[in-house]
Picture (cartoon, rainbow, N blue to C red):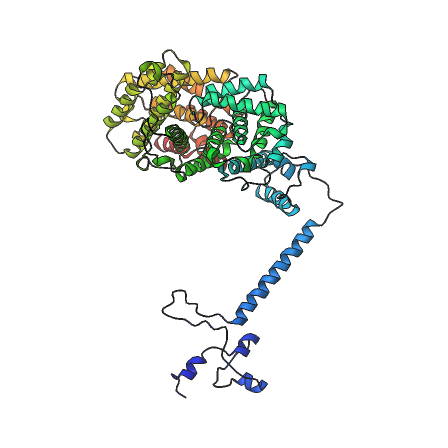
Length: 602
């Protein structure tokens, strides 16, 4: 028979019997030698895949034998899985309950009697324990720190599920009203204590990021206290977001209190209680809860995960279409709801730009993709300063100036000079800063932030000082004086008990210290004596404030060492810091690049 005949074409593969027995088939037609010796029928494989040029998948028919093989494999795997679960669920009388912070009771804040929930099977708890052990198995000296970070991440994860719940019933079984009812009795919030904390939160955080009004926050606070006094049956799905926001507000303030460790413990309990509300928050309030969570991680608990939380908040806002809200006339219905969504988006925008600038990460959205209007201020001048959105509008405008600066990094020096001067002249904060200490601090902070951004943008690779700073002696004096004034404002605020620190304070303080050190080393010899005292004050205040913040933020201690080495011109110490893994993990890229540039130039 010809080699090209259909008979040979059909026998290019092993026969069915040889293929199943994994024997070598000589593919003779019509019967192969193995089948001839066994005296059995020889036929083509039934599991052969017939290729067709018209079918892109290439799969036309699959034999019954192959399907049966897959089914047997599936049954085998299911049997192994069931036997494994049975072994894990077996009681172990000799097992001693663990007391480390990586056990499920420590992770969720439950007692031993409260751990049995529909989702808390033995296998899940063991998996959490193993994950905490193997993923965070560090040296004994650092084990406590990493364990606490893992616990806080678990709280953040639960709170994220709370803010992202679309419909009741989709959250964790932990996030139930019944679980919250069991926990809320142990919180014991007192009106005389919490009222002062809520007022402090409104004056420190809510005034800059007004995702809700102060009156609404006070109403939520009253609902929480009334729930505690009346009992556990008073809570509904319509009020669960009130508990979440109040708990996050109190946790933010407690994390910054000088009354440690009592308030730290209270803040952790508040996180657990807020996390227990997972499936009871409706989608209408999820973005509002997300903002309260983002503000909490930026100003208080869980600062290790600020970029992730704010990034998820921006993703949620974009998915909800908040960046493309249409404009509506005052006569249209729903204007207030659109205004609240617009305000929520710009708050997340400011937080996103703040972390992008200080920590050197990409922005969540570009300005050209945003069509939502900035909140408008009243037309009457006497009502502008008392407007709820007064500070938010100034923060948004400043963030957009920084974006313009980043996009035009190759422009000539006069462009940045005019950009800086136009912002100083146009911002309303300068007009109000003369009589309002809060406005003065915000104005100086934004001014120093813009000066540092211009310095880092226009600084040549062969010089230590920006060209825009050396226009004349008056500009140098304005830069250094502004830095000293803002650092002193921070020092005064840190000395008071009613403070709410921000995660980015440490990075901005270090950036100012590096900028002033560059200016001092780049000054001409005839101008150096005139600014020696001011530069010394900047260095002293920067190191002092970073020392204070190092008790809360590990990165502050590393940046304080770098500023001390810069002051002493100790390049070997700077190189040693840059080569440390801890320095790379904690310090943002902007500061690392400034230090590396300083070493390469000098």
